[in-house]
Image 1 (cartoon, rainbow, N blue to C red):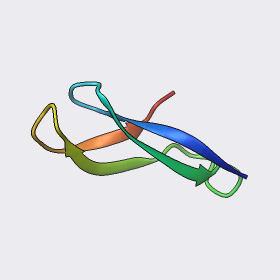
Image 2: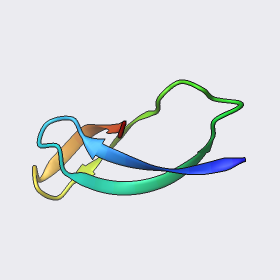
Image 3: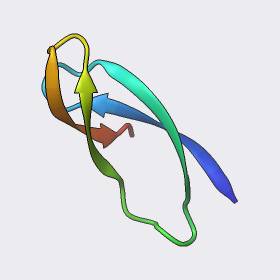
Length: 49
């Protein structure tokens, strides 16, 4: 079962991206490096609680 998750910028806290993942196969939280338009640079985006 795939659940929708929201990604939040680790620097400014802006919620920029939405993705999906299988929580049974990958129970740990996701971290991705994406572009943040507010910071105007590539930052680490963490899964929102």
